[in-house]
Structures are given as structure tokens and as C-alpha cells.
Picture: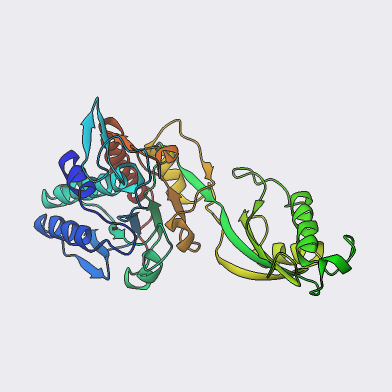
Length: 358
């Protein structure tokens, strides 16, 4: 597993450029005797008794670009004091190799004559970092799914809720004029109007706090307006990044924002909805049995869990979210070993405590 992670880290796999790594993963899985399907740079295979329940183990093989500040070449993994550092080691190639290790262990048990009483679908997918042609594009090819584990670095803390993302485009309008002939308090200046609405954004009630995620919150992230330094602007546009919770739909929240602001409010993107899995779901109970002392938590970060709103899911994996997208990101060997063992135990707990479905 350690050598596999080092090899995977050494293969550049930026989002939309995962082909070489996808080929390496496919070769490894095929060499282990698994029948691998692929679509684009997404790979999947099955292990089990070809019966339900069916559990998905999913993680992503793409990475963001390397930022400044690395102490070594990001694509040359380093092992030092039990840490494996390199681009993607933590987010999320470590989770991927831990899932592969767990699936291969389950396959060995089956080869030795054990019964699994269920099917594991392993999917290692692309373009998670830009929500592109990844897991969401192959779900219909994976067959029915009764539960899912999404591999992201969580310190093996089970994340059962995840924020959504709503992006609003707001446009304030005015009337072009000469600044010398226009009073400061005139309604003609669209930038002044936008500034007033931006203040209203900071004062807006984003709703009640979710038990695991807290309240929804927002930031104005882009603004543009004006045509010349000596012309009163007649248009100013700004974007609002809203991190939502399962307590309010994107449509309802947009309606409240629209009523609160003077400018025109349009939805720029709303497809990344918040997700929550009830603690009563068998997959959550299986995780809690497999990891005694763990408690469900909420994740502020996005992941492919967003594509599984109708599949009871838990985000969980070795590593820590705080290391993601940072120089010298790393995962420890102990974390990897614990992650592989945890994935295997969770699968066995899930199958051992679920009735077989028709």
C-alpha cells in the first residue's frame, strides 16, 4: 500500500489530466484479478457475492495544482518520520489506496472461501476538484447502491452531513452620467447601489444553525462595474458564494435573499446541494460499530458526497482535511493502515447487520 501510494503520487493527475494515473490504477486492479470498467478517467469494479446490499467505496484520483512553498518536488513523494508527503498524498490518493487495500483484502477472503453476503463497488473517479466529469457522470453505470463511503481525509471521523454551494449573481443598475453633474447620494450610481446591498448581505439572517454544520453563511467573492473613471456607472455585478445546510432548500433561500436586496438576484449555480445522512441509517450504524467511540460530524468542505443525495453516505478517510491543498501535504503510514482496516471493518459490519435484499 505504501509503495502504491508513492507511485500514484508520482504520476501527475491534475483535474482533467488523470489519464496516466487512471491507466496505472486499472493495471493494478486487473493484475489483482478484478474486472475493471472505465468511462473517461473513471474506473470501477466489484467484489462480492453479486447480491445486495451493495455498498460503494468511492474516492478521487485528481488533484489541484501545486501551490508555492513546497520543500520538495510535489510529484516526487518523500517518506520521512512515518509521513508520506507529495501532491495528493492526503487529498485524496491516500484514501484511494486505503480503499484498494480494503477491497483486495475482501477479495482474498472470498478467494479463500469466505462469504461476504453483499457486493462492494469500488469507484476511483476523476475531476472531483472541479466537480466535472467524475462520479456524477457514471452513477447510472454502477447499478443499485444501498450505501456509500466517500473517501476524503477526515481523520477517520464519520462525516454524515455536508454543506452545499449556492452561487448567486446580483446586478445593481443605475444610469450613466457625468460625475461632475451627479450628486453623491443620487440613485444613478450602480456601484453605490451594489455597495448598499453588499452591506445588507452581511446583515442577512442566513437561518437557524444545523446541529452538525452550524448556520449557512456567505461571502461576496467577485465584483465588477464601471466603464471609465469619469463616468457614473449604470451597472455593477457581484457574486455571492453561499455555503448552505440541509435545513433550507436553495430555492427558498434564494427567494429570501431576493426579497432582502434591492438589486436583481439570479441563480448562477445551485446543483451542489447539501447532503445529510440520518444516524439511523445502517451505514452510519455500521461505521459507529466499526469505530467504537466515534461520533457523526459535519463537513464544511465539498466532496463527491454531493452526487449521492439519494444514497445513504458517510464521508470518511485517513488524513486530515486541514492538510489538503497545502504545500508539503502528507498522510502518515499509521493513518493509511488504520484507514484500510477501517474500510474493511465497516463493509463487514454493514453486510453482517443488513438483511439480504431482493
